[in-house]
Image (cartoon, rainbow, N blue to C red; front, side, top):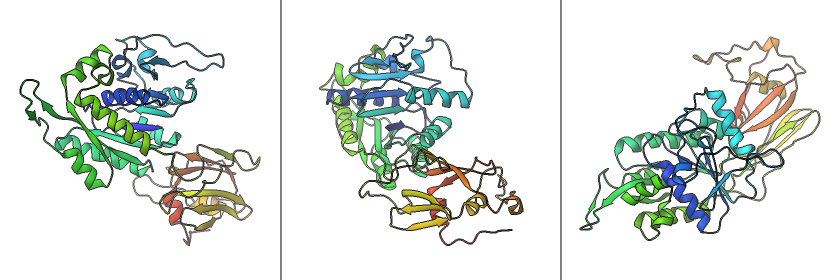
Length: 377
């Protein structure tokens, strides 16, 4: 699962996604695309998919559209062209989860997620609900776009989504008459930001009128003009992503572990992975509390009640000052963890026997609790 993201709109992210998907399909991969821009879906138009109500499979899953060898699901397939999606955040999150979990994708090698611009509900829902293999940041070369792209990249880093690289779109315009290259949006910005942030630079996609025309006509440029510089750039980026993306390290996710029933316990990490020290590699629980095994070989034991006291959710901490609201005297001494679930690649959710279940425990915060003396009654 690879998220194609951008800090701002208008950088050509959906065009990049459509052409990369077709290039991967042409290379023999089984590819799906989720048009995660619920409010402004554009992938079906770029791939020549006509609006239609999707069919349902015998097991009541949505059958995705198929175009140019790529399976696609999009809000544009559920509504008319001029019907806006007037939805609040929770409904957007439900549609996104439906597009991933309730679609009959079959056996895929790659699922590309074309995200809307920004760092809002959709990005956070994806990062918390699914084990993303990585994210790609698309930007144009000018400084404004690059600065905003940096924020999107930092957001993905904070939720432990690997950054697979930066793509510089609309890199330069080659005059079809004389061959002169004009850098309308400056030059080399994408490569510079990738170097500055220590991530891979996946390549430059030049400005090309064919890209626009082909997108409007529903014919990706990698198919309509395969010898063009833009098509060559897309194929090189697709090959780099197919080779570089890998499943995230750590325990197997997603999971929901019901401790009293013993059901759903996550499998430990397999083999060795190039993971940071605070990447969780195994998880256990016994009468003494929660046992965490980290990628650096550290074993950590945390009592159930200590974890409850350490909760930093809005019910337990003041959102503005971070001062503790929770009174330790009200937390039973015999309190137990009843359920643990994964939150993306970066955190655990926990439910306790006192009914509390709204805390998010990031791996970084749990790792930092080693040897910490917690305030008690």
